[in-house]
Image (tube, rainbow, N blue to C red):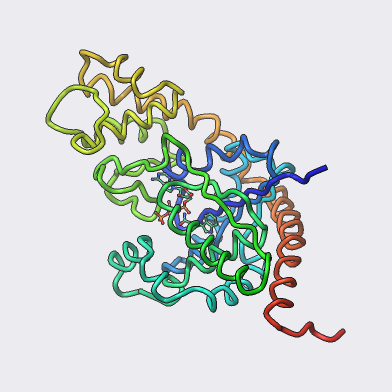
Amino acid sequence: MQSKKVILSGIQPSGALTLGSYLGAIRNWAALADEYNCYYAIVDMHAITARQDPATLRKMQYEHLAQLIACGLDSKENTLFIQSHVPAHAQLAWVLNCYTMFGELSRMTQFKDKSAKNDENINAGLFTYPALQAADILLYQADLVPVGADQKQHVELTRDIAFRFNGIYGDVFKLPEPYIPKVGARIMDLQTPTKKMSKSEVADGGCVLLMDSPDDIVRAFKRAVTDSETNVRFDPVSKPGVSNLIQIYSVCTGKTIADVEKEFEGKGYGDFKPVVGDAVVELFRPIREEAQKLISERAYLDNVLRSGAEKASLTAITTLRKVYRKIGFLERPQ
Ligand code: ATP
Ligand code: LTN
């Protein structure tokens, strides 16, 4: 019997989960467990490339875990773990750093964006971040990496690193493919619809969180920035705000973009915005309720993390050993 294909993805505990992370990535994960062997990492090591408050970082990891389970990721069918609990991530990242070019890292959009936004902390970790992400993916010999559109470049770099390494040492790594949804891959900020909705930039009120109250969600959508026209028409270039809302409504309801335009023909933004807000409220309601229940079940969450790390380690160590052997590291004498 051929073994199942492998999926790996990661999520940074650098802020609360947003509508963007849900629609762009997590929503698609739950349905994959039947067909694939799925690993999902809460990537604490990536999160510290920006300064984190230790207590908040600790709390955020449990919240992410509870919310991922509430989003339908069954902990028996999926391997859910914390990145730093599997030391092979750091170990392989170092090796891959030595097979990743300065020029390649310099071209990464996420590095350019984040260093421009935070010029007093452009640390080396932020720069080499994609080599750690490549290690996350390659340790599990992942076939597919389900992510939002912003991560495509990092997955492509991972392929390039793997290809380079395999070219020197033979077939060590599987070359992964990004797996990006057709609709919802880039949810925009509701206040600045030309910029991606981001968990680390919640201050302007344009970000909707998975755990926001229904009132807050409806209010955020009523305040969403649109344009000076009134018609509900999909045109991301000249109408980015309303096109973002159409996209969100389409993913939440399963209706096509054309159907959404038809449904609101002759109606204005005042009719449309609260309906989108309500659709998000209903989508998030069961998730929020379940996550609120799970967050107090610390022993259960710790069990999930314990078995997740054990399972992930078995696979990760096998790949790491092979890499060490190939590059000429000595095994520690017993
Ligand atoms: P930051 O913007 O602060 O770097 P993030 O929200 O992009 O954080 P994560 O939560 O780690 O970072 O991303 C988790 C997954 O969600 C990734 O696959 C990412 O591509 C996806 N994602 C995040 N934001 C969006 C968005 N606005 N639209 C679509 N997908 C998104
Ligand atoms: N870089 C991603 C998070 C991330 C990831 C991964 C995604 C870290 N490691 C491995 C997919 C696979 C982000 O910023 N959202």
